[in-house]
Length: 289
Image (cartoon, rainbow, N blue to C red; front, side, top):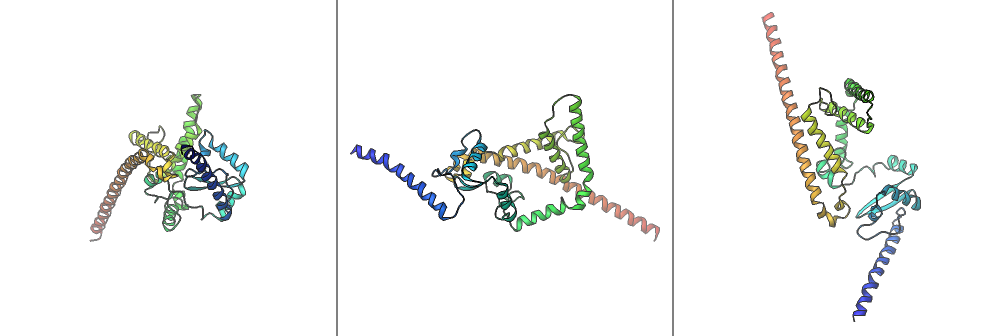
């Protein structure tokens, strides 16, 4: 009896696994899917191929073996691996609407305000409205012309920093320098302040707080969350989700202080304008009673 049970235990699991591989193979052919590596494990799919120090080399090897367009399964998510320039052009030009949406991952829920920001929102009316606002308020010709001096100032500041590093014979990390230039340009265009660098205009405490928030955003956005690919294991991401919640609270508190500042400035400028108009009107009344 025990021998029969052991035989069944050793025989049935491999048989079921083989049937799963065969049915999965014919299902892909029936659906006219792109080719995929034959070994597709249940639940995790092709995630097993990424369990090494150089996943990009593994993906390159898969592309060479299976073709320029390969369908992978990362848990419950289908992933299209495209390595041919012509296929990439086909995806991003003729079929750009099909590939317009970003996957809904856990960081986007908290960092991107439940997937409603321009970077994470699905293609549709809301995305079009956000794009219209950006195109009108930031990227329009008149706006770019008005902000030309800001761009020139930030580039000069970067050149001075590189010149100082050169005179001190110290190496300069161009990746960091260009990253700071990009953020300073965006911040001065949107908020009117620089938060990176050693200039007098940079407020030390506010800059340090902002840099810490940006560092955490980039760190947690790139964190691997197994629950995004295998929903049944989402409980393993409790710590990551709590870190994202704390980051959202910290980021929102910082933004609220900036919004309140600009509201006070707008109110102050409005009051000053009103005083100026009243004074001017009063002067005209005295001149022409």
